[in-house]
Image (tube, rainbow, N blue to C red):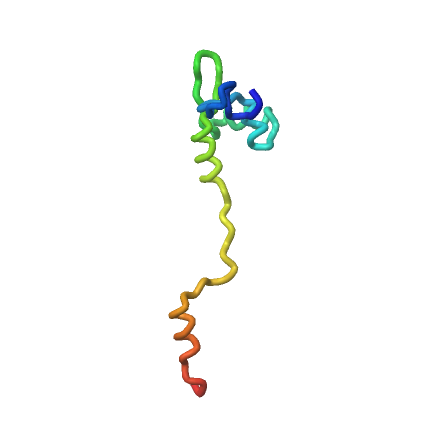
Length: 90
């Protein structure tokens, strides 16, 4: 397999192993197992194997992503014109 998340036929895999997930997330394998043991990572048990669903991991990341705060308010062109229509002698 040349790329993580793709099988030998180039098809996207639905599940990845802990070591593959660690590479995808940029963390250690130990961190993946610690998160899994604490019940923080979505996973699937197939026999004795523990695998991680790629789609659920994307959702997990999205839910935990801290969104940047907007530094300025976007004002529509109409609102911008209203701001400049105020009498100057107020």
